[in-house]
Image 1 (cartoon, rainbow, N blue to C red):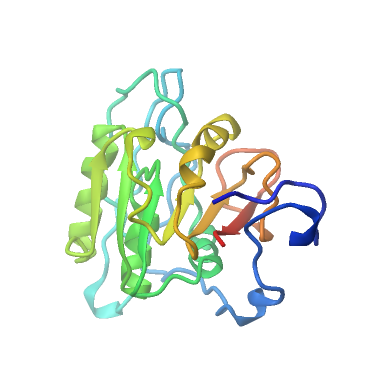
Image 2 (tube, rainbow, N blue to C red):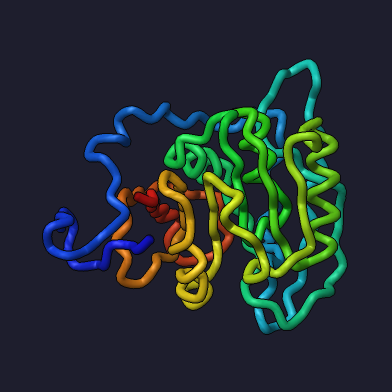
Length: 247
């Protein structure tokens, strides 16, 4: 299985690029994203540490919040407070994905209850948890920071979706990707490039959504840029999402 090279949008298969090509106009068939329920408290203004980089990253606490049972809200559930500064010598800093971006990722991947979603560098677990809450999808988060994994498990229990999602303390390069029908990434460019050999072995129909960073010369099937006023990093308060569908 190969991915099409980044030549130009619209390059056809006859030009010699075998691979991933989303059907034209599929975005119009996707349901519109809606804001996460207001019962959830927004995360604080301080970035947290994600599959931490080869620097020492401090993890700030999320604001305390609870899922109100009577509200029927569906979204990720913030977990218990503060993580202590620990893990060093890792690959990617943990930066919280804003709620509206989480919803758009799931919309672009057209997640359903038939899917198994694998989040590489899953941080506090919000993407698999939201996929389970809103769509009934099974999922797994892979995270190398033990404290973030512990928090993710607490969040899943609080959201009552721990029967659908699991979280593993594991290096993403040691992870079997073939179990997934949807893979989500918020990594860094060099890490994405190192993942390409494993992504080439995925079964047809697998959807891959990357937040902010591309796959080098692999042209995405769909690209969406959306406002992200709650984003904690970058000068622009926006997020770029890219979708690849394995053919």
